[in-house]
Image (cartoon, rainbow, N blue to C red; front, side, top):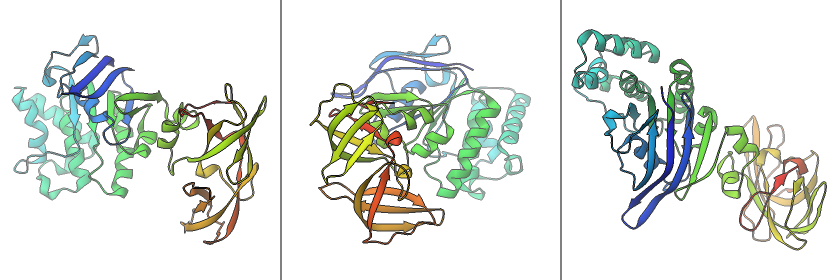
Amino acid sequence: MAGVRLNGVRKDFGAVQVLKGIDLDIADGEFVVFVGPSGCGKSTLLRTIAGLEEVSAGEVTIGDRMVNDLSPSDRGIAMVFQSYALYPHMTVRENMAFGLKLAKHDKAEIERRVDAAAAILNITDYLDRKPKALSGGQRQRVAIGRAIVREPEVFLFDEPLSNLDAALRVRMRYEFAALHQRLKTTMVYVTHDQIEAMTLADRIVVLNGGVIEQVGAPMDLYEHPCNRFVAEFIGSPKMNMISVTLVEATATGAVLKTAGGDTLRAAVKAGGAKPGDTLTLGIRPEHLSLDGPGEAIHGRADFVETLGNATYAYVDIGEGHDSMTAQLAGSERPKSGDRLELKVPSDKAYLFDANGKAFQRL
């Protein structure tokens, strides 16, 4: 196994700078997930680690080797792509063994590795089938098995679940987590799905516009986002954002006024902000309630989704704001058009300055 270090990694495509000086240390045996919106550079960053893209500046180190000038086959990595890319005329066994045959491993070693990988992935019974006789999840297991047999120091996954249906993605998330527990190998995983990131990662790397916004454990990013971008990106449904005016900053938090005249409180240190400043209040949908603690923000339910275990109310609070989303208990059933008082607990509120930087929570 080996760790990965990125030092000042930059990637330019002509005049377009896609990666803008990435510094990151990935520990030996760690499961790290890159997330971010389309075009943020996450797949490009993965490909620079793999050697499929040449870095424009900086250093990529795997283990104790600087690998900038090494080919992908010499970097000790194995990569699994969004597309399974299986040979349709070969059996599962032949697909998994193909790379080892090209590397001229002896037959007994190839059989040992293929059988071991098939056992790990529960596809031993499918070794003599061809890809057309497999389901999507089984094909993805074969693609992973083809990587496992190489016994790499680092696994790289580029959106491997995006071609699967929702139910199968849930199952495969569990299987990826179990695979990491069994192999104890460094894994770097790219996805646009923050739920995958939250459930799989030891640490999440949030990318935006070719730079790293924040790195941390999933719940650290969820509970302590460093800025508005991370706060909105991590969490589903995403965090509500409300424009507010600072009335007073006290030792116990900030007193705020909405455009609609509601007074709210946030348990944050609003250091540097002055009364009258326009700030942004953030509150997650699951922290809003109809009868909990905190001051209320008033609005009208535009649309209500009843899902059994939860009720989602989309609430118009006026003054040009987008609808707020409130995730309520499934037993609560407001109707479209109802006037609602959504309670905002001060200890669950976030506050961001005009540049989107988060104020420290108390």
